[in-house]
Image 1 (cartoon, rainbow, N blue to C red):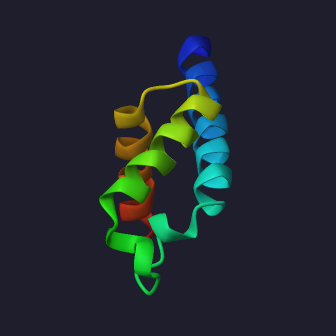
Image 2 (cartoon, helix red, strand yellow):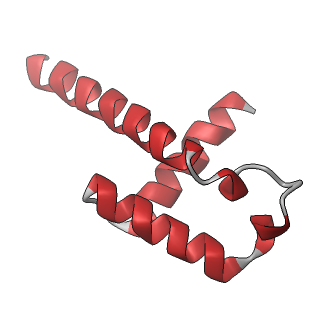
Amino acid sequence: AGVVCGKEVDMDQFEERLAEEVRKYEHLYNPSLKNYKDTQVICKSWKEIACILDVGVEQCMKKWRSMRDRLV
């Protein structure tokens, strides 16, 4: 059970760090911005976020979608 708890804490920390990084890239979540649908800008942003968090781009995007879906 301790391992599971530790893993949950790590995931909470990851989600918090991911949210902090995504917050810096408003075009990833604000549809009123012109870059919201610009795939090149979006791809570059996710690569930067993944590099900062030291995880894969796909993992970042998937986790962000999951977090966003929980809130919406």
